[in-house]
Image (cartoon, rainbow, N blue to C red):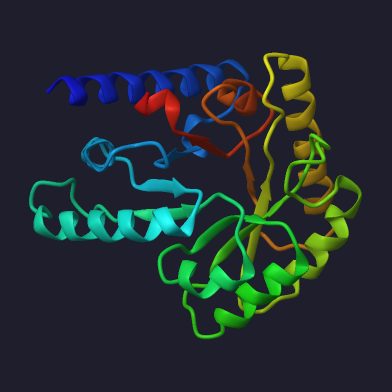
Length: 242
């Protein structure tokens, strides 16, 4: 019962923070999706957020995603009468993805936030030839310009987006970025602002379709800043589970 209360309270706080921030700046909270990141969570904690109505879960690594998704799927099948009606989990791949893992990921996740090279996108396109609906991908951009981070350089992002948009077996739905891990909110905001500007540049270029509408940015330590700067997907774990 104590675990249930803690997770419920934390999830409610995150939702309230998002709603209050969105309303304050004139955004609709319904346009902002929480991706609950499960990498540090126990299976029991994951089950609890599902009971609370969460249907979008994110994982960083295939070796974690497969056993966890299998266990959760089995549990949901056994307890389907106790769960909210029509509960269906969408697994988001949010971590760095190697090309040799693509076909395995696509069996579990149809939304990949971390596409950072043309070769990775080509691999997804190749293995998705018979997939319906098409996998959704986000182009990861290194808007913090940190050398240790994955992501396409800002200067190459528009050209890369144009190339991804031509691939017939996948759907380019937006951009993803990671802010610097710092207490300096100005640096975090600058990264998010640049991502939003880049998103708008790509969107109005005419090279992408109507499905290009998401900005995945903001985590437990900076999600309200991300909302202020236009995020539509927030990747939040420790603020809910820790």
